[in-house]
Length: 277
Image (cartoon, rainbow, N blue to C red; front, side, top):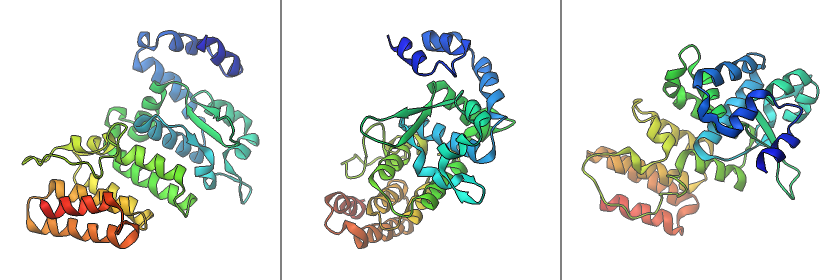
């Protein structure tokens, strides 16, 4: 039933490979899918490639669709900012290429246009190709820079942090599984472990200072968001092994309290845990 509905809605862009992927993508090797996706990526302009990379990164780490309006300033028609839909209306060949990899999805009761990968494996392949370049298997080495670039691009397009963007950033960078670990009582462990944090932060852990740089980027983009300072403080005191690192965490707690966190029980919990450690 699902396959019938999907193909009915996407028949103009459907190809033979999609029938097979829908029925059982385990039968396709990564190399086969990589060749298919790469052939279309090569035809995309820089702003569309950036959007594709951001959609894939967000979906890979949160399983969330992306509202194209969040990245509206990436696209111009002439000298004017136009948003993705208008840009693609004037670049129909590129629209067809993009829609081979990601698809539009409408949400009932909303005029917004959302995008998601056609198949979850497409998101993985896009990240390998666009982040890893000539060495796709090394894509996670470039994940910190792309993560910071994503945060900065969102800030450039969204001066103020709306609920939709906040939920997306939290799901990608901060949630552990489906839960926000901030304010959760945790047993202290002598050895620093990465599974206390989001999957993305866990993936960048082998790269020196990468986790902290990403958390700092969130606080720099939206300094009034007390929970971002709280997550940065929690990260610092969880990994701290000398007084200076604890003092640094205390400084971030103060930033959280000075923002909107003075009466926030979650931030007060973080402050208490920091002093306790």
